[in-house]
Length: 235
Ligand SMILES: Cc1cc2nc3c(=O)[nH]c(=O)nc-3n(C[C@H](O)[C@H](O)[C@H](O)COP(=O)(O)OP(=O)(O)OC[C@H]3O[C@@H](n4cnc5c(N)ncnc54)[C@H](O)[C@@H]3O)c2cc1C
Image (cartoon, rainbow, N blue to C red; front, side, top):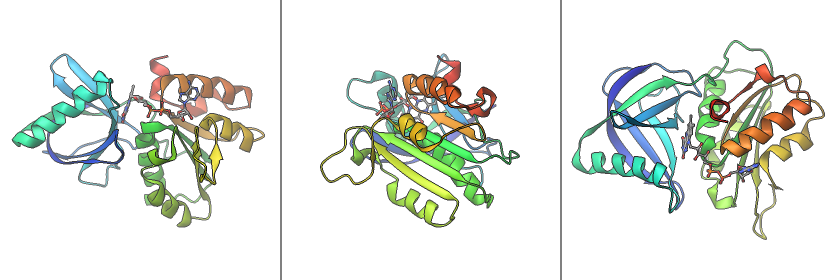
């Protein structure tokens, strides 16, 4: 873990409640795809955000969901917006967490994201592709409404580039025109795999989702030591 200064390069809206933030570190960073950073608001107030980018990229990309009434993430976003407006740098601690990509594993992969947990699986999905890992990868992304699938086009391209990669968006409350899967995202995984024994499973999203997914997947054969989520440390 190293603390570094970053310039806020850009903040843009991915949806009405999710912002993309690009940070330019003042020095080289070291992290594993799937790790998170902590944004230091003060010495004692540090907030975790998954890194959506991969180490080969110069900029650190974050996806911050700040729905109305959510002071935890809104305060972090405001901190970044103020620094951006004033041209000041922010402090981050990079390379945190134990749920990063297991690059040496030969097992097929399931990536499970709920909402902005997508940032975490995006980093791992991009790393798998950059390493030309040619094994089955299933990326499930669950959202409440389909307009929250802010990287859908990019993920379709990612899947189209490798016959072994699959992107499965799952909408909890679909509109009349939605043609894809619906319901809770972890239930879509349970429907699609008779046994989860053979897989490395990476999970990020609301803590409640991570908890129910871990238990349901274990009942369907997943090995607990092959399921990875930083949320497990909080539940
Ligand atoms: C280490 C760490 C890193 C974090 N990184 C980020 C980050 O990068 N960006 C960020 O905004 N926040 C981050 N957080 C905070 C937190 O994880 C997110 O606020 C959370 O993932 C937000 O989910 P959402 O509101 O987008 O999902 P929601 O919109 O609430 O849910 C999305 C989907 O998840 C599933 N789901 C939700 N609830 C349940 C349930 N009770 N049971 C079963 N399935 C359910 C459903 O399929 C649902 O459609 C982080 C927290 C930690 C500890």
